[in-house]
Amino acid sequence: MDVANASMYDGSTACAEAALMARRVTRRKKHILSGGLHPQYVAVTRTNAELLGDEVVLAPIDVMGDEGLISLVDKGTASVIVQTPDSFGNVRDLSAIAEAAHENGALLIAVFTEVVSLGAIKSPGEM
Image 1 (cartoon, rainbow, N blue to C red):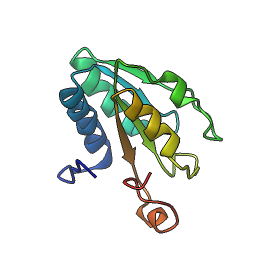
Image 2: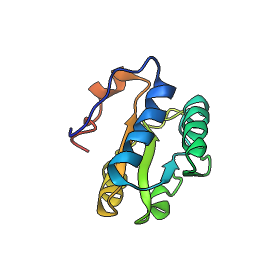
Image 3: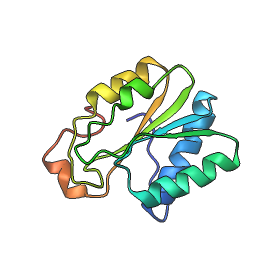
Image 4: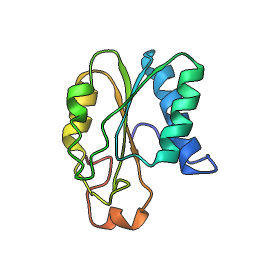
């Protein structure tokens, strides 16, 4: 992976800092958050981003994990933030979302709250 940051105290602040890092790297101000992202992660990320005047787009909450994130990504997107397994327990292959983000010059931020799941799926770097 090109960038990793493990110096945060908890997941929600690390997620917010990753969005701010994507802002600095891409020089863009739009963040797309998965509807399956933990509500605390959403709240902290939204607060930090909005204080800087960034746009935060929260995808619709969908318990099946089919929220249409790819359609929300455009050339103004700094980051796409997803969680797997998400808050509803869905484990997703993030390859298509990563490809859409990268094609538009955005960064994919993958949040993992259940580290054991990494033994069953491809690593974020492989996706």
